[in-house]
Image 1 (tube, rainbow over the protein chains, first blue to last red):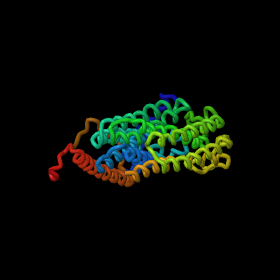
Image 2: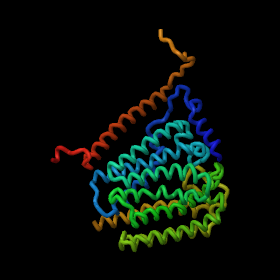
Image 3: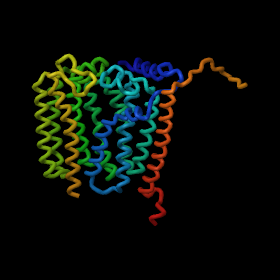
Length: 329
Length: 56
């Protein structure tokens, strides 16, 4: 989709004519909360908390709570800004057409204002609650997600989620920086775990949602390079993820408890990735229920299982890392 | 009688659903602002930016 037609769509959606004659919208507070992508926010909160727990040093309890709230708000703000920019394609995709803007409950302009205000407030408050490094990282994350990923990469390259995945990988690094005020090998390692986890996670979903992305012209890997190439790359990234995930044992970030869990979790990940690699996932016309994240036809089941497991994997990896640090403390 | 420079030609009365949604938004904004002010204050006190007079 070219930028001119995108701008026209945004203008059409945000003009008064697209909404109620009185000029009042039907958006309720819950719709603004939905703009913040609460499911993504929960993962952000959890990984940011893990970064905060794993970082050497101590932080006053309230400052720690405030920092996590700010990181969550920043992530939510970037979600709102993403929905503002992607309003045109969200309306056409079964997975996203029930979002507040495509449903006509609010204008894209309202989402833009909401996202901008929350972005500024969250960055400023994180600076007050922690330090300038953490605040700068949060500001960069919002910029990266909106400009680099949403505006640029998402619609132009099948590598969109590989590079764009960095935005989702920053929260533990921000949590770490909130405590220490710096960036270290171990905080980069936490970043790398999510960064390398992102491609197999999203491509597993894309394999059974190929049609959805394809009809709005988003160049996801299965649409551009084909399902076979995507399955190969999922396998390659899964092997790389296993290597990265055990690295904390050697840098002193994690101990024996994590080592045991990491081996089990990565065996599970590799086994499911192998099943995807051997399957014909992505080669079936369309999934069983377009609106559902998990309903699939039998040929896509391996991809669906990997997608579901990958979420548990990330929670478990950071959960065990944090639990071990807390036990040691 | 009031005179308008640009005389309105058409009025659209808001529906009850629109008024209810606006009311909910107003309350949410008020609560959010109050929470935010408390949040800023407590954070500044905890960081020592605003001195806590009771602790000294």
